[in-house]
Image: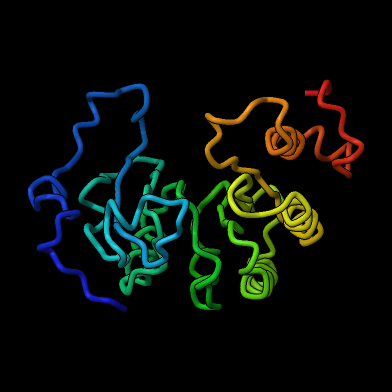
Amino acid sequence: MESYDKSKDSALPEDIEHTYPDYSLYPELTKDTAYGFLTRGCPRGCDFCIVKGKEGGCSYKVADLQEFWRGQKNIVLCDPNLIACRDWKDLLQQLIDSKARININQGIDIRIMTEEKAEMIKRLKVDAVHFAWDRYEDKELILPKLKYFKDITGWNQRKTIVYVLVNFNTTHEQDLERIYTLRDMNYDPYVMVYDREHTKGSDLCRRLSRWVNNRKIFKTVPRFEDYDPRQG
């Protein structure tokens, strides 16, 4: 793993990175909930993502859990690639030991999943975990990992969500293939529209997102070609 250079511009000053948050500023959002980063940075450098430029091209530890958590019932992690960090095992153990409900809101990199990582993630108290199949060309790497993660955890569809990036560099046929494949594997796909603000509601990618992301419609209309946009 690439070492972390603290001299790089993307690093926050130490006193800022390690200051306990003033949760009283947003009491409604932070009631019984702690927010923070255990790691920053990501080695992926995806063209559609700003993390590498903002935080660096290596996942590195920046905090221990107690630096922003003091017994709250819920923990929201904003880490971009937690399990890419070389300290992943210690950090996951801290989350397990907290017995708090965990939300890793930026997702988990399924491409570097291992049996040991899956076993530890299984021990987390979570409502759901989020993966991503953004790059169609990662198919042969992602699908076996998704299969054995499901085999290890036994978690149902609602608890295993996979983001599917559209409107970037894939065809509509590739988008549908990813969506149908994930559903067949008992995962819950969720469509993310790239550059959404510059699309129209009538665009194919927007109609696709409405069909998939409305769970009631997605379950009752199994094929996109049968979806009527007037349904939702």
